[in-house]
Image (cartoon, rainbow, N blue to C red; front, side, top):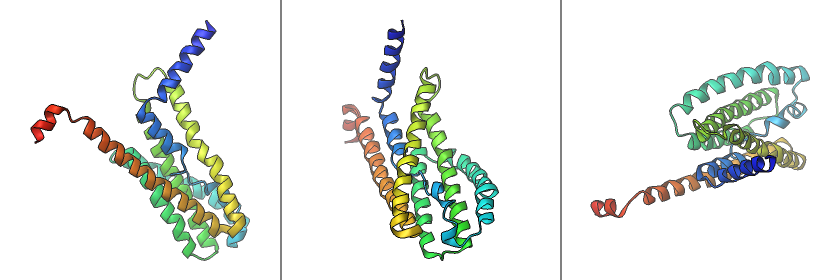
Length: 219
């Protein structure tokens, strides 16, 4: 009985990976499109920006909480009005441009505050969209809802793991500027590629929906 149960479960899980919508969302979550991993190293960069530890703690406590709440509320409003996949990638691009803009600012407590609050706000906005996209993908009445949600959630955490190594190495080589530039450049390139993929899939699906009869009518 156990073998039959696990066999059926594995078969159902493998069926998930044959669904094109699930594969697209796995790509969006698994690639560093809107992970904003800089939030994991910013709390340790206070000295680079001549920021007292008390200010660092305040920003990463109450400041981040307040910024995250506002971003989540904005994310809920945006998710109800925009296509979720494009919104998720758009957040990644705009957030990366924000990261690049930090390179124009000096290394001072004000810049550190802007970076900390801004990066965490964009991450919260991305997480809100990610949650909506997960629920949309799982859908209603799905017998594997919990399994599918867990798989998508684990995939979304993957970039937070490997991009932290990338950002840390970039910081070791060129300081905060290296970490900011590397993280933003990778995210923009990935988002641009995924937007191209979505456009290709949308065009292919549109062509597939054209039956011979409808093609004759259009001619």
